[in-house]
Image (cartoon, rainbow, N blue to C red; front, top):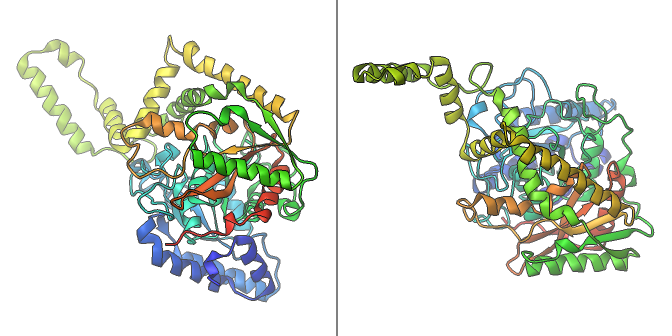
Length: 512
């Protein structure tokens, strides 16, 4: 038995029985990180000493029979987008390279209260804008199943860390598929809860009406454990839902009776890889063998989901990222260079006698803003800021942003009507298995279309989950997406666990 191949739920049972200590378990993962991290590049920072200290504290509490948190002694990797007091939080951007938050995100506070052990910070697309983890300012993360391929994004580092056995589970964020898509490409479980189920306080914002914190794990049980620990109302987040958190980990193994599974006709058309389609249809047959009934349904406005998302999300990003101006916090351009440039431009204009140009010369403050943002943001972030700024500009707001909000409402109505007929919706998570690194570097639109099956859940605010359901002929993982009505995470987890227990795909591990 390879210790790091076990799921978080299995580790928790071993920790509770005393058959292993948290220090031993944490050291095993640190050893695994030492062995494979240079190949995968999943982490931006590894906090080995701190992790071992936290693990020792949990072991001491266990020995003294003191009360322990729900995740006591379990190592976890955290996407580098959640604020933690005194710990560098970069969002994989040069803009926040040295930023140390003065407070904890609510999710971090709850993980600490649950006695989780923090292994380190995982790589991501810059400010969570991307679907391949290639837009990180620091490194490119690789898929453990094939190091020439992408792990997906934006939470690619978290997915790759779990897939490579460097962490039993991990925290990610999902704005348009950024948990579920990399989970599918890396052959692990990834779950996005209902919008508002998990507090966004302390989450560095990309698109505030879409962002949601969620879980990666080796099994559906892992996702249930982690969600149970971080979910709940938070008065510091105005969008946090004041509803009870069910005991997901206690109910996850109870199968659903007479479950109605819907499959969306629009999801099985041109552009879907034949191997992916075969794996999804086989998964539907598994559900049928378990007593589920299958129903063809329609989400007629799903064809507009990607376009709608790429108006709303960049618009919100344009607003959220305006705060990075080089004044309050984060990166600031070299002021000496900027002032020297200003002096040289002034001298050139004066010498040339260009009075009009001199009058229009940018002030030092404006130049500082412009240079800071030009140097601090990467190409993909700049692209989305410009898209959003354009969509919100005078004369275009009604034509783009307002219209996108109306279509968003129609997309939500499609789901409401579908869930009146079925309990869960099943389908593909991506059009094809993992693509090669650099394959879509020159075609942003092609990369955006990888999210064609995932963005709708964010626009509608419903929970979604991805779990392994097959492999391509070349051995790449294929993921099955399940979706449920808002606040029905219990149903979603139980439905996913039914399939997981009837198949072996979640037991397969990347041979790295």
